[in-house]
Length: 296
Ligand code: SF4
Image (cartoon, rainbow, N blue to C red; front, top):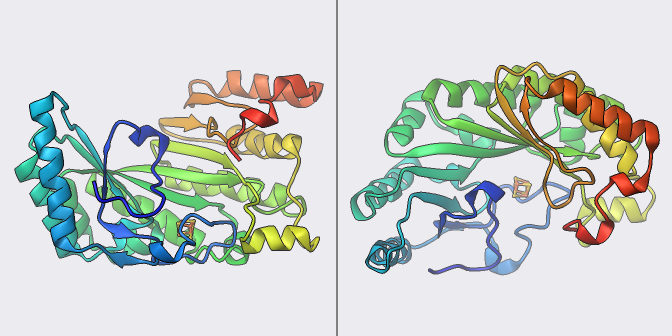
């Protein structure tokens, strides 16, 4: 496989063929993100011959007993690539590796809203099963501060488009992204947007200050203060407490999180609230994941 730079993928794509069809992120401006800051990963579409050779290589794996059922298209927001290019990738995958049952991709409101309903429907027909979308916050002020490049209203609109196309939507939000000062407002607005989007999957990640990012600099200068673990869990309690999902698999078990949770909501809501209330009442650090086990 021709993998350039660091490859990122959602945890649920651990078993997938990671097919890198583009490099970097077309936005690359979020103030907390250093995923694609290496010059080698400046945004561009990879050459078709390279992608075709990777698909051909994966197609030979079946002779070794490796059955490719899932494919994840990398990098950052590959959904923003032109429709005809994405269709060519999906058609070639279908032709060369007929065992593929689902293709996943990173996208955001910018890339989802650039597609027409018919284009999304076509990608669904060709095997696109899930879009992973970092919504991060429902608060417009936070989204603007972190230079997310899209609004809360656009995130809700993109959820509707994916739903209509029958494509699953996995949404990530970031605990702590508004700092201590905006914490409560961020959590309430995030609960609200998640309810409006009503996605089948939600992942709540913990904001991490990554050296070299503008957010790290702001923290160094005293312009941003990350909430402590209890503040993060308070946000989680607000989000889960206000949740009103139809049916959602809700995770807060990313490597960065202080208290791993994996819930079916609304079924597990009461149980989760009981646990969060208890942990927040006790404030005993032994209830939290030790720092050395957190993927920072
Ligand atoms: S859209 Fe995603 S990958 Fe791109 S800069 Fe923002 S967080 Fe990073």
